[in-house]
Length: 627
Figure 1 (cartoon, rainbow, N blue to C red):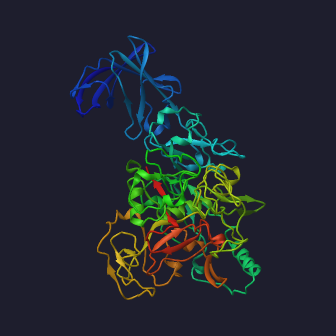
Figure 2 (cartoon, rainbow, N blue to C red):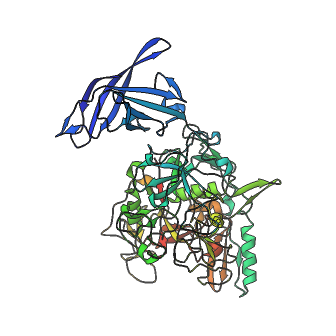
Figure 3 (cartoon, one colour):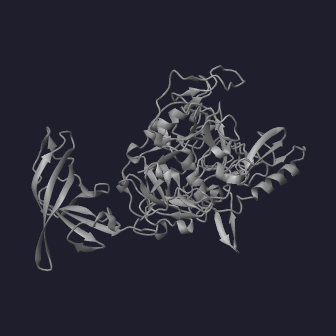
């Protein structure tokens, strides 16, 4: 190949050259000429005082499955550049001079550091692994920004000394690195140093270079549940002062649907998925979480978002006691502090708007944003299916509930040693005992550390590939908000308790008694983002209006609903695993999900409650990427 023309695009230290190349190859004795559309070549060492120096000759050789070919594989053929075996050679000195990368979005080569004449680059393409069950909704690695990984079930880092798992390895994407059929969800990480080519397939990625973990949720359609006639039905249990009676009532509720019903799910890309506007029993619809971004899926934070308490950019605590739970409470917009890892403290004490824009600016090129209520629902429904915690056997279905993270210190990835048997009491008692340990990388007396293999019961898959902290841990704000009576966005309750978004305040007087008739608009705060980043709900004056929920968000479809009193406290729960069920209402317009460490059996992937949107030391958030 010879350079035909080039044009300087950038006179900064890194020069960017656009050029058209003519390929000359000898294949079976025939000389083939082919012109390739614009390639982009980055030259790090060939710019002096803004002037691009002579580049000399640059040749390319293309290989597909180790066989030489005359052109680059087409974008839709399922091939990926094997960077471990692709390189450039100085032909005059016969030595390697540069590695190459591939721009998957534009389907173009990226060659760096060419400073010699007569250079030849060898590009090896391999067919990537594609699970047929996903029907095209395969993991999108975001132009190489996300590093595909596998997580060991049998060995873990030296940070933990028990029977461990959790070591991370770079995946070979040409091999079977995920399988939703086998409940092995695709995982990827974002590296602290951002250098994705430092690791070869199969090589360990050290925890100190992992900034964030993510799990792929493929686009799917699901069959509607037959719950509409029970959206507003209730059964009650009076407080008899006898724990056994209340526990038996909980067990009866849990057996209603959560332990026996699985969502019927069919994966499919946006070109192949099922969709319908007929919303009745037996219909299938594309889950709404995928339609807002017209995506083939999204990456969800594997853990609740943590706060990096270091000031030097490192992403690991110097020791198990150097960070603390209070140090993760900050009401600020600061994406540089984001870490999504096991064994860190959840970021809490933050208003919703600050949490949103922290998420929004975290990875703009990957369309990062704070998790929506429907996106929580998408993870919950996939969990409550044969691809998650449900098994089909002996002519029936059995679904295991995701175990609660019972860490009082809000340590991510933790799991209770046994499932609680009673609901929210705000007391530490035998039926709902939470963990008081405040050190990282250590098992508590009533909890498992993430690196302890027993912690996998707190995963959405029951293994290390799933999502953690979906039950318990911190309460999680999601972008799901109630409108006021005039159809305008609500900010919160008053000037003290609000989301920091500009919007309606439902009770401007700072009193204990909320007024349903006094409304005002906050005079400060942050403007709302594009509407695709949040779900809205019609005005409600009661927290029992479950019929105002959205399909796919994990509210009304988790009915029927029940209420009971335990130790004088009124609790309302849904029919799926007896998880908490309080709908957004005036004064409390923001959804929170999952429950916290005190919730007991009320915590779970089906749990939802309502809050002001204000900074709260028990409430955090989760980040989603939609490349």
